[in-house]
Image (cartoon, rainbow, N blue to C red):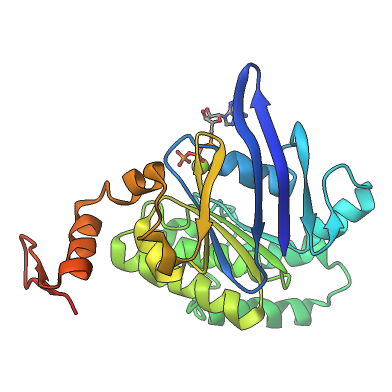
Amino acid sequence: MIEVHNVHKSFGDSPILRGITCTFETGKCNLVLGGSGTGKSVLLKCIVGLLKPDIGSITFDGTIFTNNKIEIRQEIRKQIGMLFQASALFDSMNVFENVEFPLRMLTPDMSKEERRDRVEFCLKRVGLENAGPKMPSELSGGMKKRVGIARAIAPNCTYLFCDEPNSGLDPLTSIKIDELIYEITHEYGITTVIITHDMNSVVEIGDHIVFLHKGLKLWDGTKDEILNAQVPELKDFIFSSSLVRAAKKVEQEGGTIETNVGEPIQGE
Ligand SMILES: Nc1ncnc2c1ncn2[C@@H]1O[C@H](COP(=O)(O)OP(=O)(O)OP(=O)(O)O)[C@@H](O)[C@H]1O
Ligand SMILES: [Mg+2]
């Protein structure tokens, strides 16, 4: 479990995080939800140590990370996998070398054969067993995300952070990437934190959701609770989508969702 306690972060005179307290549960997909500019990425950077909170602390499974000794911070960092917003693959390395990279950095005692086996295992797990020799420029956006996930989990991460894993992907590919992250999280018991503003992800994989608004945590709960949450800012956020509004109406009143294309969506 990751515990975030009273985290504040300002840039100059602008307070961005204004006292965030929340937990991210082990073996679950924990979503940080909120509009653009609310401080989601800043919170993630504070958690993984890319930014230092002005006030507050972060604890990983009982070990304090913030302001702790460098050796302890490094030990925790080794257990963190990151999927960056733009996948951030190394353009000059092929897919195999990209996934192998963190193993070379973090596990120098691993033999070449062990590394090869681990890379092949991870590429197979994300459905890219034959893509090793390909260069990033030859991959689609969804394939790049898959390689990013394989690279993040290659060193057997305990904690996985994904900043907007669906950005730039079509809805179907987005769902496939969400499902892959969800499966990997539950299969390996990883504490996964996903930054998103995608309501599809919330209803698909939101085991636990933290809603941020203007640097404050206004709500947390599960995907089953979110549609009935009574926080006005959260309701505005959720029901800004006309499809979600229509789905909610169907749930309450029965009937069908009227769409302009294809068959109407049936309610229960
Ligand atoms: N290094 C920085 N220096 C100054 N201001 C920053 C820095 N990083 C972020 N900010 C500011 O903090 C605010 C929150 O940024 P953040 O990137 O966390 O937003 P976000 O919630 O992730 O938004 P989005 O959904 O658009 O990615 C923004 O106003 C941004 O300009
Ligand atoms: Mg962001």
